[in-house]
Length: 66
Image 1: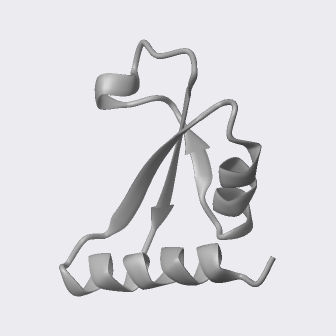
Image 2 (image 1 turned 180 degrees about the vertical axis):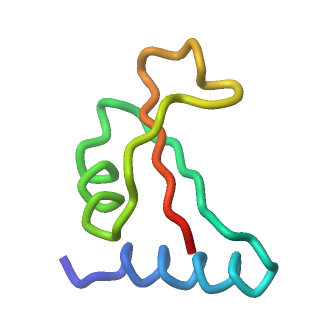
């Protein structure tokens, strides 16, 4: 509850932007409510599962344009 996860996520977004990426895409499990809340809290939107996760009903995917 000290904001460390949000800080790490923010630093990763900065790094991605420095590498000329325009969005971040994340995946977590549906049994990881803390991760899901973290992503929503930091401006991520839920998207359809992508790549290897398309047919994985236990996956939850997110994206954020940076």
